[in-house]
Image (cartoon, rainbow, N blue to C red; front, side, top):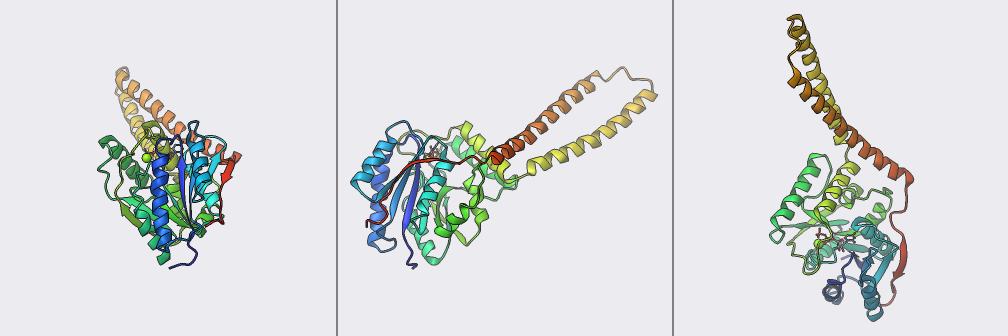
Length: 321
Ligand code: UDP
Ligand code: MG
């Protein structure tokens, strides 16, 4: 067992007024039990990050903190998205905690898996990934899109842990490592493996969201996948190069063929092939330009290096046991 064992559970919340009362109850029960077993210190906290929700999410967090010091809160100045909210929570927690567990507010991640994560931490691991053993409770559509997502990422050369979302434990030095990654286009699942240190996985069953709606509709998921790929891999650019080479090769064959037809004196026919080439080459060019433009956009936002989050207020009572 390690003696530095203050745990902060970081929970990003966006419009989660429906789930917070239950989530806070369950997390408190978990932490209280872990404290009683001596596996984490009594200074451990549950840190809710309000990601600019306009509903009662922040007032609920304030109430929880006022009633019980085990609850802490961070209020962001506006909505910055799940990844940035999580980062804000981790960067706040790292000032007080020895280990940090990140999880969603909707309790889809099995709270009990935390025990095994903490065991792994005590065994000396710096990063423990929560991995879903099955997706029985997800709809076919969600399962299909999510699994395609992991496969696409792999194919595009992004190193991520299969079926791992953002339920993970990180030691303080792992989070300090994370703080050195300054990128604005944040894709934590891709960054965390790049920090290094010893890591392991813990399996758990993913449950259904017990209240409220998913904040990740298809549109957000697609842009998430796209961001993930373009932030971690230049493979798409290489594909364009490859495509260009193939088309150039084909064009040489076409040239030869055209010459032969011209010599044979049959140059009027070929309207169809001309039309097809024009449209296809035009389409491919636009597509390639779009991909390059996407990377340009990334460079643009990284060059500006705007803050990834701005904290409006922190509620934390770090010393009180
Ligand atoms: N979330 C957030 N900011 C956002 C969107 C979502 O902090 O702009 C939080 C949300 O409150 C939840 C987590 O991110 O705790 C995951 O969201 P959700 O459960 O809706 O995603 P899903 O599980 O459906 O992929
Ligand atoms: Mg969810």
